[in-house]
Image 1 (tube, rainbow, N blue to C red):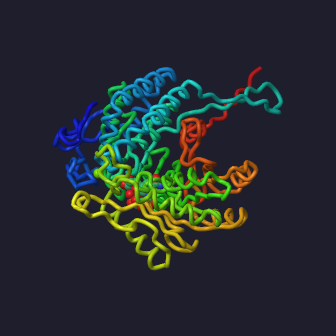
Image 2 (spheres, protein in one colour; image 1 turned 135 degrees about the vertical axis):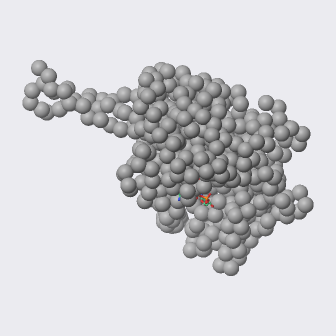
Image 3 (cartoon, rainbow, N blue to C red; image 1 turned 120 degrees about the horizontal axis):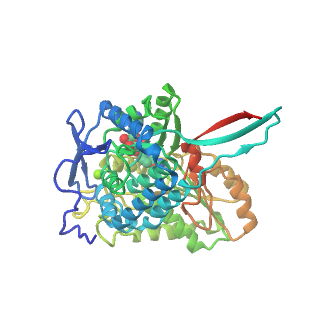
Length: 496
Ligand code: NAI
Ligand code: MG
C-alpha cells in the first residue's frame, strides 16, 4: 500500500468507532462504552475502541473454548500449517498498512515498524513449520509384563495474552504463532495506548481462514479487562508482556485455577564495553541499544559499563550520537526516534531525569522534553546520556523505558560481572571484546536470558528469548516456546 500520511487517511481509520472480535463477530462492548486512542506525535484522536468489561471477557473466553473443542480441534496439523502460511502471506501483503497503524498509534518511526517485517513474517512461517513437527516420545520402562509407555503432547487450551504498547505488531505475531502451531485458541487483550494494530491483524486472521473463535481480540483497560482475563477460570494459560508489577498481579490472579503463566517483563540490561573492543562499533551499539524505539524496549541496554581506559571516549561518542539522532513524528521518513507513547510515560521518564540530577549524575546530552512548535503537541524527549552514575542511583536500578543511558566506568572483569548481576532484573546483556576467551567466560557468568557478544538485541525465530529473576519466566520464539503451549500426557498401555 502506498500511503502518504500527509494526504491520505489510513484505510483502517474511517472515523467510525472500532469493534472488537469475539467468536468471529465484530462487536461493541456489552456496556456500549468506548475509549480513545490517540497519536502520541500530535495528540490527534485516531479512533474510539470498545471498552470491554468482565462480561465481554466471559463471552470471548466462551468463544475461544467453543473453537478449541469444536472446529479448530478438527484441523489436522497440516491444515493448521496451511492456514498459518496463508496468514503469513496476508500479513506480508498488508505489512505496510500494519506498520503505518503501529506508527500512528504508538509513535515509532515508520522505518522501524516496517523494518521488523522479515523477522515477524519469518516467525509466523517458522511456527507454521512446527505445526507438523510436534511429537512425543516412547519410554523403555522397567515394568514387568508387556508395557507400551509414551508421551503425548496436547495443546493447553484457551490462552489469554495481555500485550504492551511498545510493539503491538510484534506482540501480535509473537503471541499468535505458537497458539496456532499447537492448536490452542486465543483471547488477546491489547494495551490501552495502542489497540488498533491488533484489530486489523485479527481481520487478516479471519481472511486467512481461521475458524471463528480461534483468535478473539478484546480491547479494554488493564485493571478491568486484563484483570478479568488473568483471573478467568476458563483460561488455561496466560502469556503476558509488560511491567513487573502487573506481572506479579497476573501471577496472583492465576492462583484460582492454577493456570499456567509465562511472563516477559522489564529489564535494566547491562551493556559491557571492554577496552580491547572496536570502540566505534561498541559505542554506536551502546547508543542504539538505549535510544532505539525511544528506549521503549524491554531489552534496552540502559546500564552501560565501560572499561576505564576508553570511558571518556565512549561517553563522548554516545553523546554525539544522541545529539545527532533526529527526533520527530514517526510518520516522517527521516525520523530516527519517535515520541514516547503517552504523556504519562513522558512524565515518568522526565521524573527519572530529575532524580538523576538530584542524586548527582552528570548530564552529558539531552535531558529535556522537546517542545518547539513542531513537537510541542507530542511526547518527545531528547536522547539522554548521564555519566558519573553510581550503581545505587535510581536511574541505574529501575526500568525507565525512555531514551536515558547511564554510563559507568569499571576496571576488572570480576568487578563488572558482580555489578552487572547486582540487579533485580535479568533480561539481556551485551559484551564487547576481541578476546574470545573472555567472551566465553563472561557470557556464562552473566545472569540474563540472552547474552549478545559484539552485537546487541539480535533476535531470530530459531532462538529463544526471555528472562531470569524479575524479568520473568517462560521463553518466546525458538523451539522452546512450543512447550509453553503444550501439556505432556503419559500414556500406559499394558498388552500381551
Ligand atoms: P503494564 O504492564 O501495566 O501494561 C501492559 C499490559 O497489561 C496492558 O495491556 C495493560 O492493559 C495490562 N494490564 C495492566 N494492569 C493489569 C492488570 N491488573 N491485570 C491484567 N492486565 C493488566 O505497563 P504500562 O503501565 O503500560 O507501563 C508502565 C511501565 O511498564 C513502563 O514504563 C515500562 O517500564 C514497563 N513496561 C515494560 C514492557 C516490556 O516490554 N517489558 C512493556 C510495557 C511496559
Ligand atoms: Mg495510541
